[in-house]
Length: 332
Image (cartoon, rainbow, N blue to C red; front, side):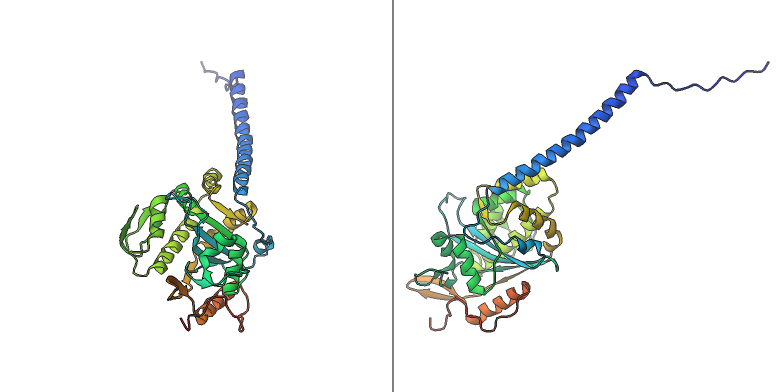
């Protein structure tokens, strides 16, 4: 007697399985929609936060400077306030001209010593240290003074106080540097050649120390540029909009700039490669004491050299008849 094969069993789906599939589809749809709503909210929250820092301060809008793809310059200003119990306007003890070439993906940071003796733009007073331009006359005059000093156009400025730098470094999770010398100052305890990860407080101390550096303020300028480079690299690696929001929150009351939020997003999109090709230099002055006050006086030849370098970085022709607003040290 032969066994008759049984017909294949048909799989049946119970209503319960139908409900499960529908529930999963609904959940996925909700996650997609929710993610879109959250992304929209996070973007607008970041935009609203950064808008609190916008301050043109009488400087003309230069929106085409970025979108044109041509080289541009940003004046980075750091005031000695916002931390360590200092809450006045403050002098700009950090002054760095950042020239950026989007097409070549290169950038250069040029430090201007805070004690450089200049004629402040538009001022009827006698010569003054360049770091006094901001507390006396504001951001616009500071930008104009630097423009006339090195004979270049400056398209944007960013003013950040010590408290903002400390908070921003903490917001990105700290920065790593290769110390240029060995010293212990406040929260910074570093050894030359031994890389170290610094939080906001220790990075601030690392960039502020001057008396233990044989190069004095010039050594401090080099460490300031080092911190900025490390910060730019770390910030460029942030991909989470939520994380970026925390960075912007750290700046809202500590920064002012004529960069818009869209400008900032454009810079973030373009700085991935540029941030890895940053060079540095300093406007080198000579020591001088006038009426008991110490200054740095940049020779005409030094200013002309730096000016030529900056103009080349911006794709501008060399100005052969350039006369700087820096005061020549001859005769002092």
